[in-house]
Length: 499
Ligand SMILES: *[C@@H]1O[C@H](CO)[C@@H](O)[C@H](O)[C@H]1NC(C)=O
Ligand SMILES: *[C@@H]1O[C@H](CO)[C@@H](O)[C@H](O)[C@H]1NC(C)=O
Ligand SMILES: *[C@@H]1O[C@H](CO)[C@@H](O)[C@H](O)[C@H]1NC(C)=O
Ligand SMILES: *[C@@H]1O[C@H](CO)[C@@H](O)[C@H](O)[C@H]1NC(C)=O
Ligand SMILES: *[C@@H]1O[C@H](CO)[C@@H](O)[C@H](O)[C@H]1NC(C)=O
Figure 1 (spheres, rainbow, N blue to C red):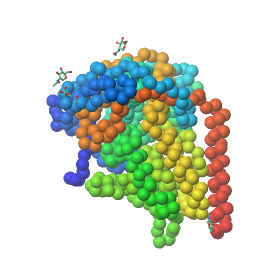
Figure 2 (cartoon, helix red, strand yellow):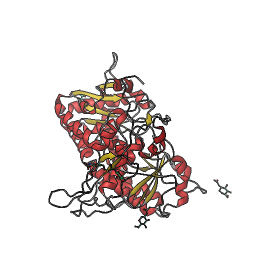
Figure 3 (cartoon, rainbow, N blue to C red):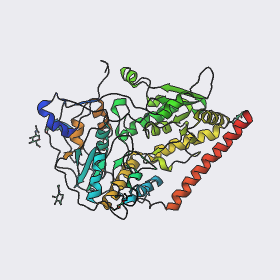
């Protein structure tokens, strides 16, 4: 790595314990997966124990109207234990009658596999070889057994997120035992659990799923930050993008489709490169290749997400699998041109073509993109409406409160299926928000502090809506298919007239 490349070191609090006597020990992470996202770069992150400490948080009454617990982060007393004085319950001031957003219904779908059988110890153990971590919650505390390293700080920020959920709803998250995979590709494939002698599939939590998989979809780490590529926690970056998009009104934006990212992670992205403007072709597409090494050297000058709302249309294209870039692309109220994805994350299954985005087929994508842009420039009002609806979906449905509520309900429903009592595995270690934040520094620590839940919620989670009827899912898929077909028909007519 170049001299001027700042290293972002996020450490595991419990790793430190073993490293205390050899503080200079450098643990090199294996290069696990050739990664997904638009934002991926290629690097070998180095994790090393530097400082460690213990934080305290003191339940204090604030002088607002009613007694309220405020969490404090105090890193001055350097010990290695988590504090014992966590609140174990809370009484929200408000009861809620709000029903959760519709996409929460997919929680039932993702767990349907185990609806009648429940999850036995045996099924669970079959999932261990595919998992990076085992996370156990007992009496409101989190214990982690690390099986293998994750790429960059995916695991650190995922665990940080779960710790924040425990702070938001103390005493409400039930005891549970779960397996987590932090890579890109789906791990539990349906085809491996079919046929007369098939065993029941293991439950494995992961960031994405696809039609052929049974992975249980959970929010990805980037909601709490991604220090390696300088992406702030979701609330902070969303605020910045909202300010950024105000700087150039839709009508004044470049009337082209924009994409910035690292193409060399997926064949489909490399295919997209040929749609860029050239001497021979004008497909109305503008591509900016991201060289993360250069970006890091230049302090991320050209990769700021808040400066990328400059074109009327933005292209979403998957990386190795799903891409975390999705929410940032949608947050600019440009119209999103979505190249048909194979994978889904926890919120994308309820998004609708022509309402939230313009659907693009992967084959002959240049022609489809050209048509979509030209259509948008002829129908600016409609295109703008799609852009606005897409960004509103992202802002409202993915408000952090909803992200936490989704995690809460998913974990809660999952815990109900367990047919064994979660106990702390011998090799697991307790992690808590305080030791995790205090043992880190620089951007890792900044992002943790920024995304930290500062008080228990003053209301209960939203109410989980019932499962979709199978017919409803089919009907909704059919409806989406029909809309996409309609767009194809318009396009066919357009090209026929043109030729
Ligand atoms: C730090 O914490 C330990 C254990 O809670 C306590 O015994 C010790 O007195 C504390 N040290 C300071 C300087 O407060
Ligand atoms: C933080 O903890 C230290 C050591 O226990 C204590 O001396 C100090 O007063 C605490 N600071 C705050 C702001 O609570
Ligand atoms: C959890 O709480 C129960 C009831 O208070 C207690 O019996 C049990 O020992 C606790 N378990 C752990 C691991 O703290
Ligand atoms: C299933 O198990 C039976 C009995 O062990 C065996 O005869 C049969 O070949 C197996 N079928 C498959 C598809 O593996
Ligand atoms: C856009 O408008 C121009 C001029 O009326 C027309 O020739 C072209 O076919 C239209 N394109 C689309 C995609 O609507």
